[in-house]
Each structure stands twice: as C-alpha cells, then as structure tokens.
Length: 578
Image (cartoon, rainbow, N blue to C red; front, side):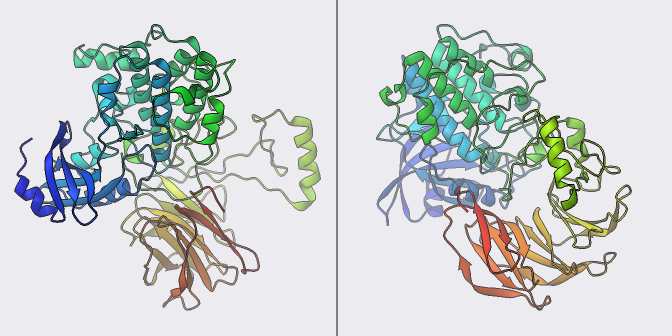
C-alpha cells in the first residue's frame, strides 16, 4: 500500500506523523502524536470501499469509537477524506500475540482466551462483530495488558452494505457459517476456538497450507482432532467452540469464558489466573470460576442440539445462525429490552429476535399468542402449574384454551426485515409493529384468527424503527428510531394514519424506547447516548422538550416505563442498573 504522507498530514492537522508500525490486509499503520494532548497514537490508513462510498463509514467508525473496554483498543478519531479512511487509536507498543505465542505456557494461552472472550462479550453486547480474530489482531500495551484491535475494520474497508457481502476473514480461522456468508457472535467464538487450539497445541485444527477450497471444506465438514498435549478438560471446552453448527457452540462468549476458567482451574489448580503473565481485567464471576475446578465439563454437543445451559449473563446474546442482512458486522445497536428468552421448546431467538430456523428467518413474521389469565382463574392456573411443573421445560398454560399457548391465524408477513417492537392499541383491536426496514405497520387484529394490514406502511424514519407505543387514548402512536429521532403519528383514523408535526430531535444517538405517561400528555424516550428525555405532547402538532435530559446512567438506556399514576419513571440501562 503506497500512501501519500502529505495527504495524511493534511487530513490530520493536529497530529505529527511518525514511521510505519506495520501493514496488514486492511491497510498501513503509522505512528503519530497528538500535538495538543502530547499523546502517542497509531494511525490506521484504510483504502476506500470498492464503490467509493464515504457516507456509510462514519456511523460504523463512531460505533467503534464508542467501544470502551480494558481489552479493546480505544479509537480516538476517524477522518474520511479523498478516498482515505483514517482511524486514530491508542498506540500499543507491547508487541503482538504473534510474536509472543512461541513457547507460551498453557496457562497464559488460557488467559489470552479469557481476555479475548471478555472483549468479544463486550462488543457483541453492543452488536459489533469482529470477523477476523487471530493472533495478529491481538496486541499488548506497555504494561502487558492484552487488547483486541480491528473491530469492524473489515466492514469499513468493504464499504456500503451492497459491497459488504464479500467473504472477509482469515481462512484458517473461518467458521463454517462465515464461509457461507452468514454471521453471528458464534462466528467470532469459532475463531477464538481456532486461536486457542493453536496456542495450546502448536498448530491450528486444519493445515492453513491446504488449497483454499479444501481448507474451507474442512471447516465446513471435518471434525477437528483433539488438540495434542492439551488437558482433557480444556480440550473439551475448545472443541465445544469449534462445533460446526453455531447453535451447538457455547451460548455466548461469556459462557465460554466461564467454562474455560473452570476447566483451567481443574487442569492447573485454583488461582491459576493470578499466576499468568497476561495482563487481565476480568469480571468477578470469571475470576471466581478460575478458583473452582470443573468436575463435569460440557462436551461438544451433538449436531442439531442446543447447549443453552451455561450461566451466561443476561446481557449477552445467544448466538445462533442468522442471515447476514440481520447482523451486519458493525450493526447499529438494538437498544431495547433484549435478548428475548428462548422458547420452552424449539429454536432460540437470535440477538435481534429472529428465530434460528432458516425458513422462519425468511418469513420475518409476527405471531400473536393467546395467553389469557383472569383474576378468577389464577387459582386454576396455580393448581395446573403445581401438578404439571417439570422444571424449565414445563409448558406455559392458558386457562381459557388448551394446555399450551396456541398460534392465532397465519403469521403477519408484510415486513421486509426483522421486527423489533410491537404494541397493542388500548382497545386491543390494533397492533403496531416497528421494523428494521425503517417502516411501521398497523394491523387490524379485531378478528384474532384473521388479522390484516391497515393502510400503507408509515414511512419517514431514515433508519430502522426500534420502538412503538400508543397513547392512552389510542389516537397517537410514537416511534423511536436509530436515526436519533422520535416521531408522532395521528392514528385516529386507522386506515389513513399520518405524521404529526416535525421529528423530535435532541438525542445524539439511537432512540431505543418510547412510552407515554398515563395522562397522555408526556412522552419519555431512552437513547444510546445514555440519557432520557421528556417531551410535552399535550399539543400533538407542536411537541417540545421538557426540562433538561435525565442523566446518570453510564451506558445506553434501553427501556423506560411510567408508574400508573405517572409520577415516577423507571429506566433500564446497559450499565446493569435500573
């Protein structure tokens, strides 16, 4: 890659440029220094996407800059100019894992696995995939703290969504679904399994010198041999991550880390984490697991089965195979109460609520399930539950109808992407649905067995719609979008809904939740910028902001709810607090 340093210097006038630090598949890295802050930096210079598109990169770069975790490289700045994309990040001068891995003790290899898993769990919780976990993308700072670099860089390099379908990654680390161009958090977990396999045994599971089609066939169909010289407990955990079906791998990278910490404690003894030479910043439950030897490690599951039994954190999604268009590499944050719990039996949902079955994924459908429990029937329900309870696989009961909830009518299928939020109108006759295609639909569900669409889709948002809520009188619908706005819609005539006033602006990131106060005069909105805003919507045509934004959360606010008297508002955040 030949770079005109004068062009780079002109694009970054506040920086002094140094010499090259390295060059990889995605671009050249130069040393630099921010003059005003006297801060050393690394400047990654990326070539433009094949279609020359610039506008689509900035949101991805902003998302990467928002990642803040001890094991993730910090991005300071992003500049796009004249066909170049410049990412300014912290300078890591402790070398790469590629240089350190020769002769690495197995305890250190497992510590690397925990650190990378922590970085991935954090990024996956923010809907960012890495797509290229390998030793070259794992660096160390001057203190020895491990950092994962190049999150989402492949997406920026490839350009717009129309050009991002090219297979990106390192062949020896590619998950089966990645070869087939289908991605999920489990894809990164597979690559981490390959990395650990090689660190522990000295060789990857499949020979990288094989012809590419043959190597891909191995990833797709060949079960890797048990890694040579690796303790059985640890080998079982690594092989679990290398399951061919993403649904057969651990349910999350955090769950994988718990398994690995337990297994390593069994192989190396309690306290092994403190004896490694790898700089670590781990969650307390992972450190605790490192002192508790595993007596019954989870072996790789047989094909076609799920292994959703690990005590993974509720903020970490369950990885399952999903369509690429449902999970772009650096997909913008969902910002709702999620992930939804798995069904009592059948495929588990993906991070966006899409079912694992490919046929069900394609339908992007909504099902309305009848579960009606009246006050008079509570005693009957409890009696059934007591006599029929069989643990987590017990069915849910409807005292009105059959022993399990039943689908009503056909799936509602008019949306062209995944459906993120639904809300019933107060009269129960209308359902609103918010969609990843940026539209909202209204459905007449007065006849539960034959629901139908009402009018044309509501359009106006410029990005996907993440939340919908009806006013208490049912005449107004509020919608929140990834485009940083809230909109109000007049739905008093269900067959001819239309926008009210101008979009409500002020949030600096996606808006993931909206809710009306019981009196219908106030609307609350929650945003990825960590704030909550209150809006006076008593005059629906001229809504306006009330007071200053509510602050205090240290991460995204994903949900808000009023009490019945409207005097108290609750908020839920990615910072683990309410």
